[in-house]
Length: 151
Image (tube, rainbow, N blue to C red; front, side):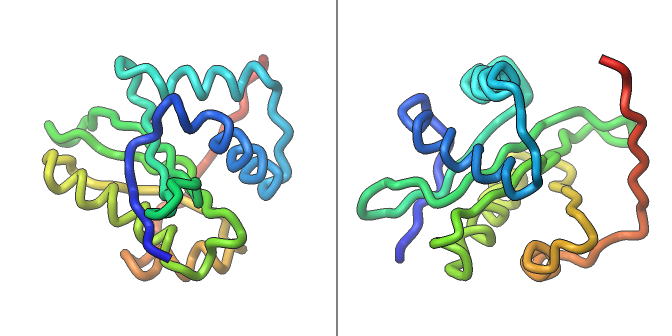
């Protein structure tokens, strides 16, 4: 199956919401509808640092997966960094290099735009994702700490 990687557009909303729901379910998350709407609004607002790209079938433009990424400054460099926050490929498209194409798109875009790096994290037990990610780079030695703040 030939795949096209392109920016997320307003016409993708219905298909994106289905993929987003499935992605959240994969991680055992139930988000308030307002949270999903806020994310969608950010993805559609060119003035926010939150961006989205999708993988679509070249013949039908049906969505196969997405990536959400955040562009931000860096204190140790004058270059913009890209945090790949979410990556999801529909189960029927897995094993067809769709996830690889989405990450490659970010790497190529970053190279063309002069970003300092593309980075991400995943759960240690997510073996399928780690096999994909290891094709790009080895995991580093950093450990993530998270302080949850009261609502």
